[in-house]
Amino acid sequence: MTVLGPDSGVLVTGATSGLGRAVALQFAAHGIPVALVGRSEESLGQVTAEVQARKAHAVPLHADLSNTAALSDLVDAAASQLGGIGALVNAAGTDVPGPAEDLGLDEWNRVVAVNLTAPFALARSVIPRMRASGGGLIVNISSVAGRRGWANASAYCSTKFALSGLTQSLAAEGRGDGIRVCVLYPGAMATNWGTFDPEQRREPAGPEDADPADALDPATVADLIVWMATTPGQPVLNEVTVTPLREHGWP
Ligand SMILES: NC(=O)c1ccc[n+]([C@@H]2O[C@H](COP(=O)([O-])OP(=O)(O)OC[C@H]3O[C@@H](n4cnc5c(N)ncnc54)[C@H](OP(=O)(O)O)[C@@H]3O)[C@@H](O)[C@H]2O)c1
Image (cartoon, rainbow, N blue to C red; front, side, top):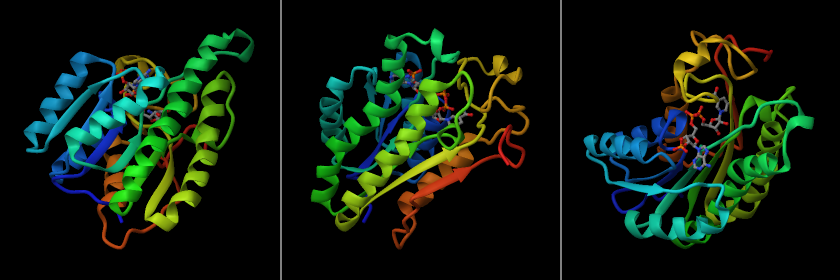
Protein backbone atom coordinates (compact mmCIF):
# COMPACT_ATOMS: atom_id res chain seq x y z
CA MET A 1 0.00 0.00 0.00
CA THR A 2 1.21 3.50 -0.68
CA VAL A 3 0.57 5.59 2.41
CA LEU A 4 0.09 9.14 1.21
CA GLY A 5 -2.00 11.83 2.80
CA PRO A 6 -1.84 14.90 5.01
CA ASP A 7 0.49 13.10 7.47
CA SER A 8 2.63 11.19 5.01
CA GLY A 9 4.30 12.69 2.02
CA VAL A 10 6.76 12.37 -0.80
CA LEU A 11 10.52 12.86 -0.80
CA VAL A 12 11.64 14.25 -4.19
CA THR A 13 15.25 14.78 -5.24
CA GLY A 14 16.05 17.15 -8.07
CA ALA A 15 13.05 19.13 -6.91
CA THR A 16 14.60 22.48 -7.85
CA SER A 17 14.25 21.96 -11.59
CA GLY A 18 12.73 20.06 -14.49
CA LEU A 19 11.12 16.70 -13.78
CA GLY A 20 11.67 16.78 -9.99
CA ARG A 21 10.01 20.19 -9.74
CA ALA A 22 7.09 19.00 -11.88
CA VAL A 23 6.67 15.91 -9.67
CA ALA A 24 6.68 18.06 -6.53
CA LEU A 25 4.05 20.42 -7.95
CA GLN A 26 1.77 17.59 -9.16
CA PHE A 27 1.83 15.90 -5.73
CA ALA A 28 1.19 19.27 -4.11
CA ALA A 29 -1.83 19.76 -6.36
CA HIS A 30 -3.23 16.58 -4.74
CA GLY A 31 -2.65 18.11 -1.28
CA ILE A 32 0.20 15.70 -0.55
CA PRO A 33 3.11 17.07 1.54
CA VAL A 34 6.42 17.22 -0.30
CA ALA A 35 10.02 17.24 0.91
CA LEU A 36 12.11 19.01 -1.71
CA VAL A 37 15.81 18.21 -2.12
CA GLY A 38 18.15 20.40 -4.15
CA ARG A 39 21.39 22.36 -4.06
CA SER A 40 20.26 25.73 -5.39
CA GLU A 41 18.97 27.77 -2.42
CA GLU A 42 17.23 30.23 -4.73
CA SER A 43 15.41 27.53 -6.72
CA LEU A 44 14.55 25.65 -3.55
CA GLY A 45 12.88 28.80 -2.20
CA GLN A 46 10.94 29.28 -5.45
CA VAL A 47 9.65 25.68 -5.59
CA THR A 48 8.78 25.81 -1.87
CA ALA A 49 6.60 28.85 -2.58
CA GLU A 50 5.00 27.11 -5.58
CA VAL A 51 4.12 24.04 -3.46
CA GLN A 52 2.69 26.25 -0.71
CA ALA A 53 0.64 28.16 -3.29
CA ARG A 54 -1.06 24.81 -4.00
CA LYS A 55 -1.98 24.62 -0.28
CA ALA A 56 0.39 21.72 0.37
CA HIS A 57 3.04 21.40 3.08
CA ALA A 58 6.58 21.95 1.73
CA VAL A 59 9.79 20.84 3.45
CA PRO A 60 12.82 22.36 1.67
CA LEU A 61 16.00 20.36 2.27
CA HIS A 62 19.24 21.81 1.00
CA ALA A 63 21.65 19.01 0.12
CA ASP A 64 24.37 18.01 -2.31
CA LEU A 65 23.62 14.37 -3.11
CA SER A 66 27.27 13.66 -3.86
CA ASN A 67 27.74 13.84 -0.07
CA THR A 68 26.22 10.39 0.31
CA ALA A 69 27.21 10.01 3.99
CA ALA A 70 24.67 12.71 4.91
CA LEU A 71 21.67 11.07 3.25
CA SER A 72 20.47 9.06 6.23
CA ASP A 73 20.13 12.32 8.19
CA LEU A 74 18.32 13.84 5.20
CA VAL A 75 15.70 11.08 5.33
CA ASP A 76 15.33 11.53 9.11
CA ALA A 77 14.73 15.26 8.58
CA ALA A 78 12.19 14.64 5.81
CA ALA A 79 10.31 12.00 7.79
CA SER A 80 10.09 14.04 10.96
CA GLN A 81 8.71 17.08 9.10
CA LEU A 82 6.41 15.19 6.71
CA GLY A 83 5.05 12.82 9.36
CA GLY A 84 6.01 9.83 7.21
CA ILE A 85 7.39 9.02 3.78
CA GLY A 86 4.96 7.20 1.50
CA ALA A 87 6.90 7.75 -1.72
CA LEU A 88 10.45 8.50 -2.80
CA VAL A 89 11.17 9.89 -6.26
CA ASN A 90 14.87 9.85 -7.17
CA ALA A 91 14.82 12.45 -9.95
CA ALA A 92 18.15 14.23 -9.43
CA GLY A 93 20.78 13.43 -12.01
CA THR A 94 24.06 14.71 -13.33
CA ASP A 95 26.45 14.05 -16.21
CA VAL A 96 30.00 14.82 -17.28
CA PRO A 97 29.84 14.44 -21.08
CA GLY A 98 32.87 13.53 -23.17
CA PRO A 99 34.95 10.55 -24.25
CA ALA A 100 35.92 8.04 -21.55
CA GLU A 101 39.64 8.81 -21.81
CA ASP A 102 38.94 12.44 -20.88
CA LEU A 103 36.76 11.56 -17.90
CA GLY A 104 38.63 11.93 -14.60
CA LEU A 105 38.07 9.39 -11.86
CA ASP A 106 36.83 12.15 -9.58
CA GLU A 107 34.25 13.10 -12.23
CA TRP A 108 33.22 9.45 -12.68
CA ASN A 109 32.86 9.09 -8.89
CA ARG A 110 30.70 12.22 -8.66
CA VAL A 111 28.31 10.99 -11.37
CA VAL A 112 28.13 7.56 -9.68
CA ALA A 113 27.46 9.21 -6.30
CA VAL A 114 24.61 11.44 -7.50
CA ASN A 115 22.97 9.08 -10.03
CA LEU A 116 23.39 5.72 -8.28
CA THR A 117 24.73 5.81 -4.72
CA ALA A 118 22.30 8.54 -3.63
CA PRO A 119 19.18 6.66 -4.86
CA PHE A 120 20.49 3.55 -3.06
CA ALA A 121 21.31 5.42 0.15
CA LEU A 122 17.94 7.19 0.22
CA ALA A 123 16.07 3.95 -0.52
CA ARG A 124 17.86 2.00 2.21
CA SER A 125 16.85 4.64 4.77
CA VAL A 126 13.29 5.00 3.49
CA ILE A 127 12.43 1.30 3.12
CA PRO A 128 12.28 0.40 6.85
CA ARG A 129 9.90 3.35 7.38
CA MET A 130 7.71 2.23 4.47
CA ARG A 131 7.67 -1.34 5.76
CA ALA A 132 6.62 -0.16 9.22
CA SER A 133 3.79 1.94 7.79
CA GLY A 134 2.44 -0.73 5.46
CA GLY A 135 4.09 0.04 2.13
CA GLY A 136 5.22 2.70 -0.27
CA LEU A 137 6.44 3.59 -3.74
CA ILE A 138 9.98 4.28 -4.96
CA VAL A 139 10.53 5.64 -8.47
CA ASN A 140 14.06 5.75 -9.86
CA ILE A 141 14.50 8.08 -12.83
CA SER A 142 16.79 6.50 -15.39
CA SER A 143 16.84 7.48 -19.08
CA VAL A 144 16.68 5.94 -22.53
CA ALA A 145 20.46 6.14 -22.01
CA GLY A 146 19.88 3.42 -19.40
CA ARG A 147 18.68 1.10 -22.18
CA ARG A 148 21.37 1.81 -24.76
CA GLY A 149 24.95 3.07 -24.41
CA TRP A 150 25.81 6.32 -26.18
CA ALA A 151 29.16 7.84 -27.13
CA ASN A 152 30.49 10.48 -24.74
CA ALA A 153 28.26 9.34 -21.90
CA SER A 154 30.07 6.41 -20.23
CA ALA A 155 29.48 7.50 -16.64
CA TYR A 156 25.93 8.64 -17.32
CA CYS A 157 24.92 5.48 -19.22
CA SER A 158 26.63 3.21 -16.67
CA THR A 159 24.77 4.73 -13.75
CA LYS A 160 21.44 4.76 -15.59
CA PHE A 161 21.85 1.08 -16.57
CA ALA A 162 22.73 0.27 -12.94
CA LEU A 163 19.47 1.81 -11.72
CA SER A 164 17.67 -1.08 -13.46
CA GLY A 165 19.47 -3.67 -11.33
CA LEU A 166 19.00 -1.62 -8.17
CA THR A 167 15.28 -1.28 -8.93
CA GLN A 168 14.79 -5.00 -9.59
CA SER A 169 16.56 -5.96 -6.36
CA LEU A 170 14.62 -3.47 -4.25
CA ALA A 171 11.34 -4.50 -5.91
CA ALA A 172 11.99 -8.17 -5.13
CA GLU A 173 12.88 -7.33 -1.52
CA GLY A 174 9.95 -4.98 -0.98
CA ARG A 175 7.01 -6.56 -2.76
CA GLY A 176 5.95 -8.76 0.17
CA ASP A 177 5.81 -5.65 2.36
CA GLY A 178 3.71 -3.61 -0.05
CA ILE A 179 6.69 -1.63 -1.34
CA ARG A 180 6.58 -1.04 -5.10
CA VAL A 181 9.73 0.04 -6.94
CA CYS A 182 9.75 1.29 -10.52
CA VAL A 183 12.47 2.41 -12.91
CA LEU A 184 11.37 5.03 -15.41
CA TYR A 185 13.28 5.57 -18.68
CA PRO A 186 12.34 8.99 -20.08
CA GLY A 187 13.35 10.18 -23.48
CA ALA A 188 13.82 13.86 -24.20
CA MET A 189 12.06 16.18 -21.77
CA ALA A 190 11.95 19.96 -22.04
CA THR A 191 13.96 20.80 -18.91
CA ASN A 192 17.22 22.54 -18.09
CA TRP A 193 19.05 19.22 -18.46
CA GLY A 194 22.73 19.51 -19.27
CA THR A 195 23.02 23.23 -19.50
CA PHE A 196 20.78 24.79 -16.85
CA ASP A 197 19.90 27.23 -19.62
CA PRO A 198 16.82 26.27 -21.68
CA GLU A 199 17.98 28.46 -24.57
CA GLN A 200 21.22 26.48 -24.96
CA ARG A 201 19.21 23.28 -25.39
CA ARG A 202 18.04 24.61 -28.72
CA GLU A 203 21.18 23.13 -30.30
CA PRO A 204 20.63 19.35 -30.35
CA ALA A 205 23.86 17.70 -29.14
CA GLY A 206 23.08 14.22 -27.90
CA PRO A 207 20.47 11.51 -27.47
CA GLU A 208 18.56 13.49 -24.88
CA ASP A 209 18.93 16.74 -26.81
CA ALA A 210 16.25 16.16 -29.39
CA ASP A 211 14.54 19.10 -31.03
CA PRO A 212 12.92 20.93 -28.08
CA ALA A 213 9.71 21.09 -30.07
CA ASP A 214 9.52 17.28 -29.84
CA ALA A 215 10.52 16.96 -26.17
CA LEU A 216 8.02 15.87 -23.54
CA ASP A 217 6.65 18.36 -21.07
CA PRO A 218 8.05 17.10 -17.72
CA ALA A 219 4.56 17.60 -16.28
CA THR A 220 3.37 14.71 -18.50
CA VAL A 221 5.95 12.38 -16.97
CA ALA A 222 5.17 13.73 -13.50
CA ASP A 223 1.47 12.88 -14.05
CA LEU A 224 2.45 9.28 -14.66
CA ILE A 225 4.41 9.14 -11.39
CA VAL A 226 1.58 10.69 -9.39
CA TRP A 227 -0.83 8.20 -11.01
CA MET A 228 1.40 5.32 -9.89
CA ALA A 229 1.42 6.67 -6.35
CA THR A 230 -2.23 7.53 -5.96
CA THR A 231 -4.34 5.26 -8.16
CA PRO A 232 -6.41 2.69 -6.26
CA GLY A 233 -5.40 -0.95 -6.52
CA GLN A 234 -1.65 -0.38 -6.18
CA PRO A 235 -0.72 -1.48 -9.71
CA VAL A 236 2.90 -2.57 -10.08
CA LEU A 237 4.79 -0.94 -12.93
CA ASN A 238 8.25 -2.50 -12.84
CA GLU A 239 9.67 -0.35 -15.60
CA VAL A 240 8.29 2.28 -17.93
CA THR A 241 9.86 3.80 -21.04
CA VAL A 242 8.25 7.09 -21.93
CA THR A 243 9.41 9.07 -24.95
CA PRO A 244 8.12 11.75 -27.29
CA LEU A 245 6.67 10.42 -30.54
CA ARG A 246 9.80 11.61 -32.33
CA GLU A 247 12.71 10.54 -30.12
CA HIS A 248 16.26 11.22 -31.25
CA GLY A 249 18.01 7.88 -31.90
CA TRP A 250 15.20 5.74 -30.48
CA PRO A 251 13.10 3.40 -32.62
N1 LIG B 1 15.73 16.12 -19.70
C1 LIG B 1 15.87 14.99 -20.38
O1 LIG B 1 15.81 14.99 -21.62
C2 LIG B 1 16.06 13.69 -19.65
C3 LIG B 1 15.92 12.50 -20.36
C4 LIG B 1 16.07 11.30 -19.70
C5 LIG B 1 16.34 11.28 -18.35
N2 LIG B 1 16.50 12.44 -17.67
C6 LIG B 1 16.74 12.35 -16.23
O2 LIG B 1 15.72 13.06 -15.57
C7 LIG B 1 16.19 13.48 -14.28
C8 LIG B 1 15.80 14.92 -14.04
O3 LIG B 1 16.54 15.73 -14.95
P1 LIG B 1 15.88 17.02 -15.61
O4 LIG B 1 15.66 16.73 -17.03
O5 LIG B 1 14.75 17.50 -14.77
O6 LIG B 1 17.12 18.04 -15.52
P2 LIG B 1 17.36 19.40 -14.72
O7 LIG B 1 16.25 20.33 -15.00
O8 LIG B 1 18.74 19.81 -15.07
O9 LIG B 1 17.31 18.94 -13.19
C9 LIG B 1 18.37 18.22 -12.60
C10 LIG B 1 18.14 18.21 -11.09
O10 LIG B 1 19.17 17.41 -10.46
C11 LIG B 1 19.63 18.12 -9.32
N3 LIG B 1 21.03 17.80 -9.01
C12 LIG B 1 22.06 17.64 -9.88
N4 LIG B 1 23.19 17.40 -9.20
C13 LIG B 1 22.86 17.39 -7.89
C14 LIG B 1 23.59 17.19 -6.69
N5 LIG B 1 24.93 16.96 -6.69
N6 LIG B 1 22.93 17.25 -5.50
C15 LIG B 1 21.60 17.50 -5.47
N7 LIG B 1 20.85 17.70 -6.58
C16 LIG B 1 21.49 17.65 -7.76
C17 LIG B 1 19.50 19.59 -9.69
O11 LIG B 1 19.37 20.35 -8.51
P3 LIG B 1 20.29 21.64 -8.18
O12 LIG B 1 20.49 22.39 -9.46
O13 LIG B 1 19.53 22.37 -7.14
O14 LIG B 1 21.55 21.05 -7.67
C18 LIG B 1 18.20 19.60 -10.49
O15 LIG B 1 17.10 19.76 -9.62
C19 LIG B 1 17.69 13.18 -14.27
O16 LIG B 1 17.92 12.02 -13.50
C20 LIG B 1 18.03 12.94 -15.73
O17 LIG B 1 19.11 12.04 -15.87
C21 LIG B 1 16.36 13.65 -18.28
